[in-house]
Length: 139
Image 1 (cartoon, helix red, strand yellow):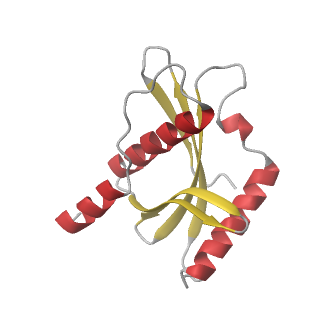
Image 2 (cartoon, helix red, strand yellow):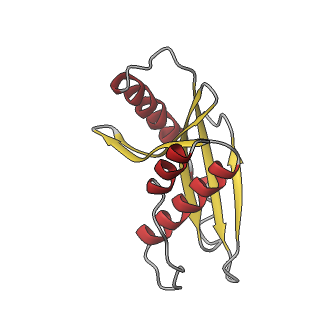
């Protein structure tokens, strides 16, 4: 990765502070997206966009791995009461992600490029550690 690409990657990643126990749902989600982006970068993905929006909804992360564009849905959980983040992704959400992916391709004029939908589930633990589960080709 060139120095210029590295600087661009850094600008796409927010600088989180430590996550206080009373952080709201939005803050937990943003922290999870940060962790997911760091994880993807460590696996040699290039983060192309974060929180891309259109009239159909939002894509958490758009990444590139070689010629493959990867649309990532990130689900973060602090406890186990609501189940895992991966369990919360429904068929309806996967259909929406496909629609969003198609719209992203149209707006980027990249209809012919291969695209994949991934889901990343992040479990935050009380000791401030975390576990990441990455499902490739989820939908």
